[in-house]
Structures are given as C-alpha cells and as structure tokens.
Length: 301
Image 1 (cartoon, rainbow, N blue to C red):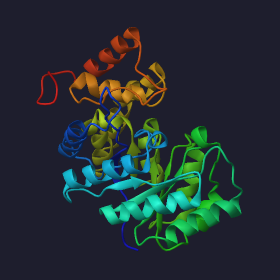
Image 2: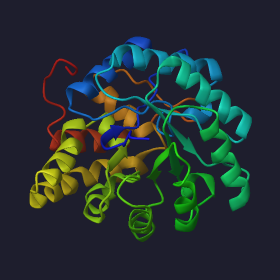
Image 3: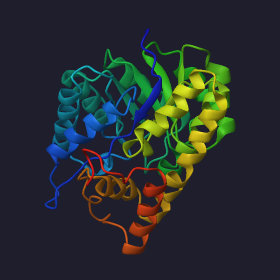
C-alpha cells in the first residue's frame, strides 16, 4: 500500500451546542480554519473529538460533515477504535463508506487484552477494509501499551501503514521508527514531542493543539523538512505553553475553550465534562494572546 500518512494532522474537537447536539456550522468553520492553516490532513472522532462520548450515528454525522467540507483538499483520517472488535469493524466500514482516506484505531480500553488478542483485533479490522489503518497507542488513557515488538509484527499487515504514539515515551517512539523502516509512518501524538519525533525520523504528528494554532504547528514540520532545525525547534518551544495548558481543565475541554476564545464555537465538554473556571480561562487567554491568536481575524472578534 502506497499511502503514507505525513505532516500535521489536527485531532479535531467535536463542537457541540448548548443542547448537546453536534454543531454543524462550527464543525464546518473549524474544518475550513484548519485547511487554511496549512494542515496536511484532518482527524475527526479521536480522543480530542470525544469519540468515547458519541453514538454511532453522531460519529457518522461528524465524519460525513468533515469529508464534505474538506472536499478532497486533504486526507481525512477517522478514529474508529472501540472496546470490541465488532464495533471497531462497524465504525471502520462506516468511515470507508463515507469516503474517509484512512482510519486510526486506538487499542481497546477498560479491558486489557494480551498481545495475541490485540493482534487479532488489529488484523480483523485491517481485513475488514480497503482503507489504510493507523495503530493508535495511548497508554495513559487506555492502560494498554503497544510494545515495539508488537508494532513490528503489526506493520507486516499490508494495510497497516503507521502509528500515532501518544505514550509520551520518546524512547519507545524511536524504537518504533528504528525497527519498522521507511515505509511505516510513526506520528507524534504528544504535542510537546513533535520536533523530537521528527528528529528520530517520524513522519509528522496528529496534534490536538493544531485545532487552535495550526500555522504554528505546521511551521514545526515545514521548517524541519526544509532543513531549518532552529526555526522548527523555536516553533516547538512557542507551542509548549498551549499543550501544558491541558491541565487547566478536564481533558479534552481546554482546546474547546481555546477555540471559543478565538471565535470558533466549540462549546464545552460533553457531560460529565463541563467548562473551565474563570481563573483558568484568563490563563488560557494570556497564552493565546502571547501566541498572537487573539488578534482580529475573520474567525475571531
């Protein structure tokens, strides 16, 4: 399979209305904002998109809206992981029917399958679709960690083309890269480690902060690819306060609140997650101001 995930791919938030419905207008606005920011792909219904809180029909609606608004301008990677293999296959086939470019499949969560069970999970999903499949490792959220040995084995499945690694363990990321070869895409899932992942030979990042600051994160990648490591590192350092601001509220609401502040109506978290405190909002506003994101633009005030 020739499809190779690369570049900066925002892990999109799911904008919701006060009534808790999908905010289609805001989702379309966000899609346009990201594409205009120079991103290399879009990733709806991932962790930042609150996939765990959405029904099958809501996921389908989100995927269809994003694919329609993107209109072929960049690849759309759809999050289709689930606790059970049968649900993950159903979601993957839905994404394929909707016109997705690829799927990203998180490990099961709550349960902790062994390596053989995990291999069966990924093999079954890969065999159920013609789409390229990305593994997704996020042990802080799932309690399941994909070893380098496992990823090497999984990479031999024809349409498993890469992995998003949100472990935060750069040694593990480097081992994925060292042991899988050039055709397999290892993407940073921890936004503070985009530059480090690229240095090791990673192909890019699936980044939550790219919802808010797409141009800055694209700069990390584009400068690195152009050989300007100092500029790439400088952009990575400028991004750090926004990623560290995740602690200002319950995941994943901080990025939604940041989008609200720059004029994209993301709403708050899907209950029980709510908003953030006024004090936290002021801190977030200061971070955005320092990044130059609160200036007047067609999305903001």
